[in-house]
Length: 436
Image 1 (tube, rainbow, N blue to C red):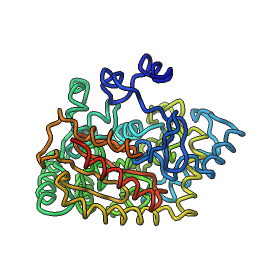
Image 2 (cartoon, rainbow, N blue to C red):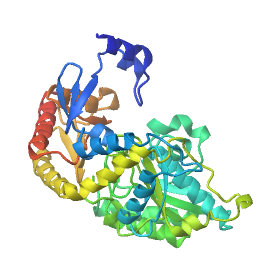
Image 3 (cartoon, rainbow, N blue to C red):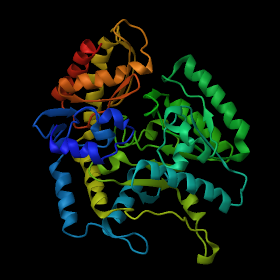
Image 4 (cartoon, rainbow, N blue to C red):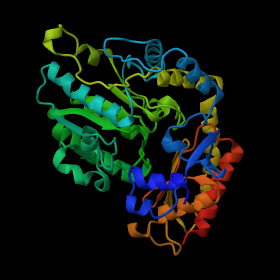
């Protein structure tokens, strides 16, 4: 084991990782990157099949994004937004108002997906209180939801493996039945039950919070635009606010800049992160309407302001890159590239659906979840760690992917070429043949 690996094992604590297992094997240490590829300290190249955890949009070391970062570095690396403002944050907020779903004209910046959702929860709750509606204390989210790791975001979560240990610290949320696949009888049953659950808490509901169209950490569970629209309309009928969490699905991954464009019902609050900074620097945002914003206005000593903030809110370097990234969506035809990747994946997936190693495949844009089966066609128990074994086998064929239990997730950069798409799919195919 080299010196870097030894130092990692001695000092680092990795997220969502059993450290006793981590320290038993040499780690893959990324040294540099180019385009859709990560390169380790030994010079081995790996296709970044999960966009460095769903963040990278236009590829690593994109010259336009690198230039935007360097240009901003020549001006100022960071300045607080408490009592001051700066050019990149101003321009980015204005640009987001142009491209976001209708009515979302105000932006509150933070630094990651969890905090973007946390801000949305606090805004929703405080909005009702400042409108005099003190009884609205409940939040509703889809079953299997994952909205982040801060306490409020975890309270919305419904993945016992992640959230059960923290139950005594959390507020109760209403878990709405959610389908695994979009459309069909299962979705119809879930929708009926979910609408009944919203009706039951209607007068006390502060907000509905959903990931539109695709629940990422739940295992790439899908629902239709009509399902999301029906929930949003019912929540709004009861006087609740609608929050869309597009931390994972925003910025082109579903085929439109925002997944909620396909829903057709604009939210009152929108949480974004990950792709906002194009995989370069931490930046997140919570967008909202003028109506919500105005609930916080008043004289200073009325104490109606939002008491929330982050040291690196609206960081100039991250905001400059985000602005350049939004330009690239237009100049490079990024959404057309997403459509091409989606078609290429779908053709191969039609073949894979007949494989004895595949139980189901769910796809939306460049996002895909592949439910795996054991070599004998049976469902593998969690202890078998089938998804992990297949993901490790993919590395031997030059691709980085991540499992969610026995679901293998593909979510590459939106700049993936046809040849790179084939390489990624070939690696998964080979790993499925080899994994025991």
